[in-house]
Structure formats: C-alpha cells, structure tokens
Amino acid sequence: MPRRLPIAEWFVDRARGRGGFTVEVADLAEVNLPLLDEPNDPRLHQYTREHAHE
Image (cartoon, rainbow, N blue to C red; front, side, top):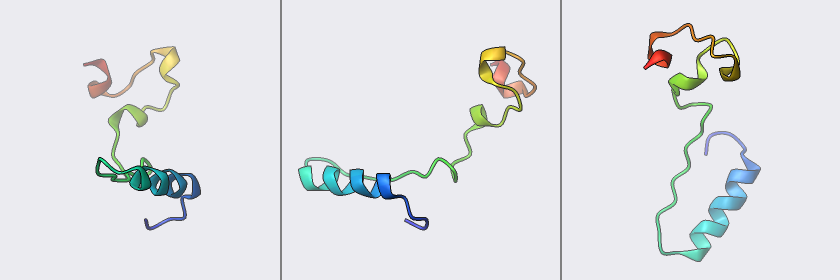
C-alpha cells in the first residue's frame, strides 16, 4: 500500500488471517469512479456529465 491506510491495513490483516479467500485492496482515491466526478451532490440530481444520465 503506497499510503498509510490504518483501517484498511487492520481489515486486510484480519481478512487474510481468516483465510478462504484472496484479499486485494483498492484505494478509491486512485480509482477513476465516474460517479464521483460530478460537481453537485447526487441528492440534487443536477448532473452535468453525460455518463451520469445513463
């Protein structure tokens, strides 16, 4: 993990310790999530980007 993510690290340690599945961390600050690029709060339904209307 490039940044210090104490909650993620805590969870990953416990999940890996439990076993039975693979653990992969996705840093949402680095993932391009188009739903987060709107300038207005989603509750307002004032979308400015085409992908938000789909």
